[in-house]
Image (cartoon, rainbow, N blue to C red; front, top):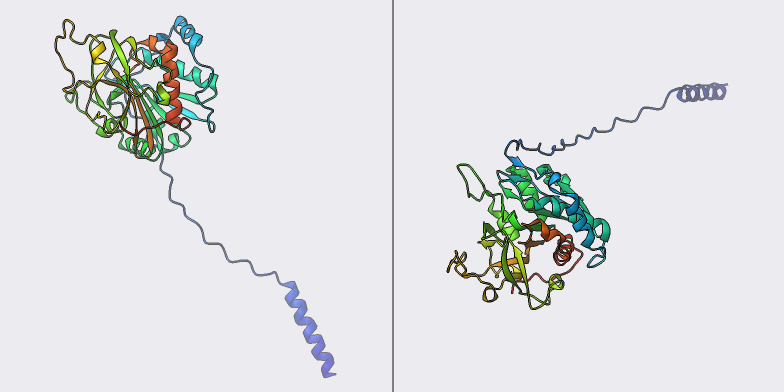
Length: 329
């Protein structure tokens, strides 16, 4: 009898246990993530910002560029490449050739399949997120203090220093320099001059006729030029410090001996005490690949097959596909 009651008691206990719901799991600890900082808003540039309008590019100009733009890359790209082309000016009218360079570079990228050009005048493109997928940037004839946001400047510096590419055209030696106002001539961001290797915009006629020396005739980027040099008409800049052959590998320069530099009205004028007038070079900035090319004031530069071939090589260098020596000589 006692055994019978024990069995009944055990069965009742089991029935009660089975009828109860299993205990709910303890709530997981809530994870709190820090807020993601938003990119800075574009600065209010108007009315001092200057953007060269696409109307400056005529159908005749397009035909000239399309007639000679290369179809083959210098070297096959290692991967899909993106090239950011930036053309904003500040307090300066802007070179008409800006839109010709935009069109030529875009077309070369499409034809050669070496890169995709992204043309913009918006400084916010230099925020960290904006540069994540960019392989190289082009400062296309930028003059004036084009953006002052310290966040954007630091991001651009970090981008180049950590292995990005930077190509600067002609007037970009005056980017981040006040063009007008009380601070006219003041270099507002000297680090940019260190990146591209020069400052200043001194020149003579806009179609000065000079003989160009090939300083490095065996360099991969100069193979499109005659090894003994060539004559050319352009607005040739005589750049100032921090230019030095000790930190840049010069590719092209003015051949003083074969050019008439002492003509009227200039006499024995010397824009540099050392009379070293470099026009194109490559260099490094940290791990970054940098190139400066003085040619690009006149629009016709961008329908010159020799110059477009040179620019294509420079672009593929800063993108990281064309290996070239950058050690100073």
